[in-house]
Figure 1 (cartoon, rainbow, N blue to C red):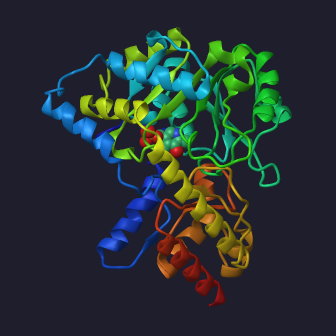
Figure 2 (cartoon, helix red, strand yellow):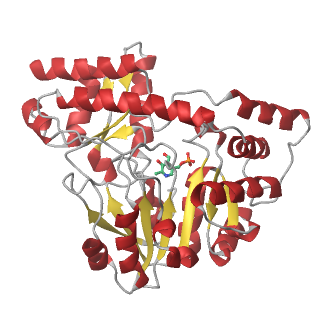
Figure 3 (cartoon, rainbow, N blue to C red):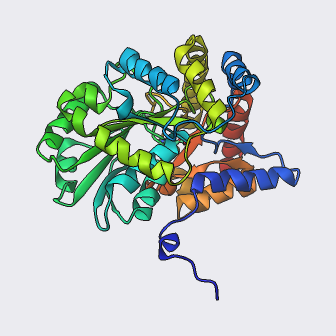
Length: 393
Ligand code: PLP
């Protein structure tokens, strides 16, 4: 009998992609499914970015590039990190990867030995635990509450750190909660981290630009510059420029770690797609007006959706700081509809109301749902109406 490697048994397929697939299946059967499951902007990639890709194609830039990215893309990344984040990096401290996802994966492979602990605040992006497990590491979760706006406290962090702690995942603004840490909150976490030099910080800044909080954007290095030497910033053009399918992300950090990530990449995928690199370069160097427009649309939808959700009996939804997700508490809704788990609830919503959402337990925080508002106002309105109708019976 065929036998697979044990590591495969440790992981599960991405639950968010699973929901999207199930919704697509029902749609293919002709059912009018409204999908709030997707983790990607609904806008087209801006034209000037596509033009850069077309130009690269026409110029025959269709061959291997250096495994960790072209020098000109690295320069665009370095300029972005300086301009937006006030952080200085040299080319040796930068790697371009196949989406932010491969950068996260490479980091786990580069850092974690069997039994090393990776601290993951919940709710978390679904792939962190499985990437840690694939590397042989052990996920250590910190639970948060709506009262704490789904953010960890310094005391919680201190309690989670052990001599085996090797990595801390931070994602702000957060998928799925939509919450961002303030600079002061990050500085307080930084105070704890300074006492534990064995911990590397992975700062997943994917949603940096999709932000409307009063506080301007900060990551942990901005808040605590002394952590520069052990923080890896992970980013991508995916969410900011509506470029999810292009698969282009990057990491910036200590040269030793970035070099190891590059070795892993050179023995697995080699370079990210050449033309995607030229497109990303145009995105980073070009006019940022397209981002402002998309963020304004997300913010307007966010406000309308939070209000509408709070009008559904049994739903409590906080206003978020950014991203294109909300993460309402639905325990009241579960009780009304006779669902024991949020998984049962999301199945019921898909089967009976034809509304696709992702259960909070997929992100480590049961009793909630993640709704993506990267979709039209019509779909958002229709979804809320259908859920209301279901509750009304
Ligand atoms: N990190 C977070 C928090 C995300 O939400 C995502 C995408 O869903 C990623 C990383 C990966 O992004 P990419 O599509 O660039 O691989």
